[in-house]
Image (cartoon, rainbow, N blue to C red; front, side, top):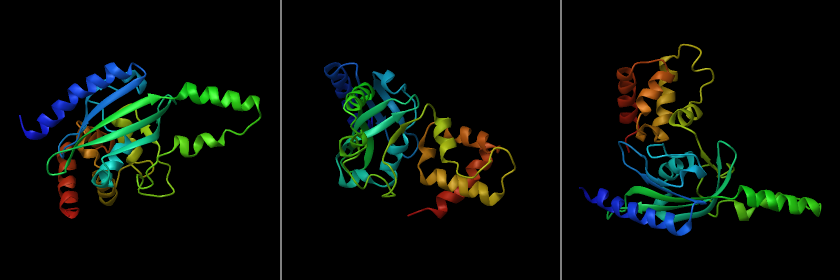
Length: 231
């Protein structure tokens, strides 16, 4: 077992402890991060966000990797999340690093605050008070550099599947209703690569199907993209 795996294995046990101690209203998620395959390797109380082992990273987790948030932070706390069935979560992420300070995993805690927010809204409505404060500091990220665009809302979206995440990141309109040009294919694959979506298990087959191309063709495009994006 390599050192990174040994480190992550320790967090598997720690995740179990957190789940037992905090209770079923807290979702505990352990995510593995590497250049070949990233995703959930352990989860407790997954009914909070309706996820399971093997599911992909969220959009915000991917942005942490892309923006290298983990370099200057050991953890991020008190940011909001939204599931596909409109639950409002308050979340925190601890960045797991190896001795070289490389990111190898994330330990995430999510708690469903939907009912609390609804109760507060009802109480405020009785007093005819605006509930705009719910969108302010108490329920927004404390770290201003979590998003690449300062005007972008730092809201974590818990997608239902890898397909949802990939579809969300294919930015060319009607890509699935017509034949894409070579430059369009390159633009899509480049964007997905820069978003680290090819780290996800099964991403190659999903992208190839969505773009109506063979996996071998996709690998050829991806090889060019990797060469052009070498640091």
